[in-house]
Structures are given as C-alpha cells and as structure tokens.
Amino acid sequence: MIDKFSVLYVGQIELDNVGLRGTPADERRYPNERLAEAFQTARDIAQHMDELGYYALWTAEHHFQHEGYEVFPNLILLGTWLATQTRRLKFGCAFNVLPMWHPIRLAEDYAQADIMTGGRVIMGVGRGYHTREVETFGAPMLDNKANQELFEEQMEVLLKCFNEESWSHKGKRYTIPAPVEYRGYHLKEITVVPRPIHLPVEIWQPIASGKTLPYIASRGIKGMVTLNGERIFDQVVRAYQAEAAKAGRQLALGQDICWGVGRGACRAPRRACRASATASRRRRGSAGRLASSSSRSASSKRATLDSST
Image 1 (cartoon, rainbow, N blue to C red):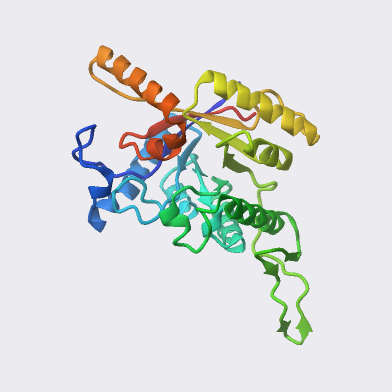
Image 2 (cartoon, rainbow, N blue to C red):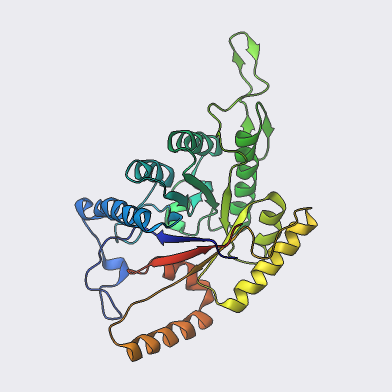
C-alpha cells in the first residue's frame, strides 16, 4: 500500500528559451548568481511540502552543470541545511554518486547529518552515469565493469562504517587502515567517529536494470524505480520480492520499493494528451536515453510514491 508521498527536485534553475526549438543544452551557460538560485528554490519547495504534509524531498547529486539543469553537488549538506528551514520533512539523497566519494568520508558526513537533523536525511547511493562527472573525479565510468567493481567495494566499506564498532578492510582499491605505525603501535583496525544513531541506516539505490535487483534485495537496500509504466513496475516489484526471499527477507509486495512518476502541465487538454503520447513513443524507442534526458527536463518535478511499509 502506498503510504508516503515525496517529490524529486533535481536542482534545475528557471531555464529560458525552452522547448523543441529552444536553446540546445550544450549552448547553455548561466552565471554563478543564476545557478545559486536553485538553493532558494529548494528551500521554497521544502517549506511548501512541509506545510502540505509530504514525506520527503529528494534531490540529485551532479557536478559541473553550467547548463543549469542539476546544480546540487552535496546532497547531505543540502539536506542538513533544509532541515533547519523546515519542521518535519525528510530529505532524500537520490543519489550520492559513490564512485566520486571516499566511502569513509561519505559515511562520516551522513552520520553527522543523521545526528544533527534527528534522522531526517535519507541515504541513497548510485554508480553515476555522467562521464564528465565521474571520470573527472578520477573514477571509472566508461569502463562499466570497473565502475561496478569500485562501487561494490565502496559499499562494503560504507556498510562497515555504519554497522561495525571497529573494523578493517583489504580490497582491490582500499586497504583500511593504512599499514602505518601510530603512537607506538601498528594499526590493525579503525573506528569511524561518529556513527549514525538511527540504525540500521535506510539506504536507497536506483533500479536501472534487472541486474541490480539481486544485489540490493539481498543486502536490505531499498529500490527506486522512476518513469516506468505499471507493467514494468509490477515486474520489478515482484522480482525484488522474490530476490529478497532468497536472502531470507520476507517482504510484502511493494515493500521497500519507491515508484517515481512524471507529471506535466498544459493549458490545452488535447495538446497535453498529444504531448504525452509522443513522449511515450519516444521512451519506448530510446530507453537508453531515458535516465539522462528525463533528469534534464526543465519541468522535472516528479511526484515520488514511496510504498515502503
């Protein structure tokens, strides 16, 4: 049963000259003063949602977007600030792009936000999809397998940070702690300080394909499906439930799944229907571009239906 309603604001500014004949994306460049407007917009949206009783405002991490589409580089910091501007609304990270972070630093930042906001920031992680962002931060994106391997090792470290009092890790990318002498003894384990006080940490991850399902369902990670129709959503929900059962997690159908649906507004009903039909045909014909093109929509205020119970 759907029992929570949320909204995704990806951090776009008020774009000018939009539409099919508008300024091409690569030709857009806005001054810093305009790009900063998105933070005030986020505050206005959050305060309005707070008054209306929404559950959470989700935002997206992106970098270098002088085009004005997605301008929030740090979702935990943003959510912590927005919590001071509202009373009860939660703030979801959709998503912290883990390959662009050191997992310990992300864990520490989240733990502080969890403590300072009383548990009002929701953790979300993703692998990224913009080569300009991920590769510039020194992580692989063009090499999908390398990106996956890095992400999965980072998740191991992140979960240790959240759940273990003291720990060590030795993998392909990370050796933690560093093999050094400290105060006269050889380091064998470390303790992350602070750790979140709301445990277990609620973690969300986007479901981009069926390959994601076994990984997240077996680890208790919740899944978000956006801009897909009922049939695909139904398949994903049932597959997630089945994969969770294989790992010993008995879930109700739809539990721990979030469905994101898009909404558009048009003064003329017939025109709106035609536009919707055209967009649907385009999505069916170019599914590979769905994630990037939808997140860059100038009117991307998606109502997210959270069916977690």
